[in-house]
Image (cartoon, rainbow, N blue to C red; front, side, top):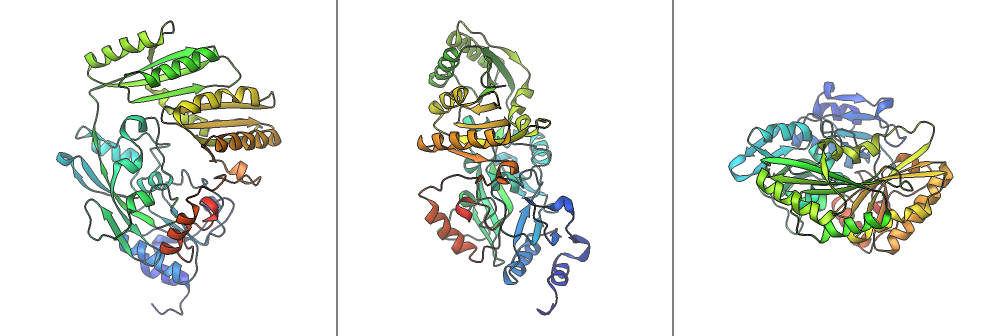
Length: 423
């Protein structure tokens, strides 16, 4: 294809005209309307599209299921949405070795259904698994309460293939074809929001499905009881897989504690007996496992005419619960706060109320969390539209992050301006 032809003709020559279309209103990214939607079928096609975009100074926004496309700051420009929809195969399930090789566009639900046929799972509980893709959850580092026992995605991924902006397909970790010396690509790409390269495939280590599972819930009405129970469970020898605390409305008395046990019936019975003794005089009762969707419900909650925003808070586990309880004194009748926090030190908070009051409270809480060594990240375009930076203060690692960006994507072709410090 001659270089004098239009980018549209060159893109069609790479992926086929049927896999290239003009962007529609539904394809806007934080208000920006890209020019093209491109759906390559192979890693080589995807890499070729990236190389063309890099050569012609077209900004690329990678997209999987689109469930978290509004996370991060708005891009400074958006010309091409590079979709992984057709890169959706499970390439190899080595069930005897507890590993799987999967393309980036495969949804988590499809992956889990396939693994379950051999009694295995990828031990993550992500948002919107029916739509979220492997590449999407890795790019956003999305994981839920199971992270407590099985680790974060950085602990579960053992290999990755990235398409770099210059068209290189680079692999690192398990099941490699080509290694890039000096970089741990799986860890670099996880949580980088697609700013270093486009994930085309990943290799994960797996875990067996539990024989049985039991969710237990307790409710307290006093702040002192809540703090005591949280601290006692954290300090106990209980072998639980997940622990979360739900506050339907901070400022109201009820706080719910959910704990997940997995294993044999005998083992779970012993753990539940130990839990009841730790919690006395409070009691835990069996609960429906749908309560583990509480984090997702905060994102999906309809608040009518109220201004609302979802934020992710991170802190030392022992500090996070008291910090959220202190929101009671910071909130007022104009703002309501709901939260789901995990024993890993990560929480999801929903602020709703008057716009100016929500912005003020979020700003004050962010400052307090950063002073304590934590962070508060916005996951809502509503706040970003008001000038609230998604990431907050940059850490001391920013110079290193900029150096990596300059090394792997010197022209800022990928997701320009979306990451920490405008990377």
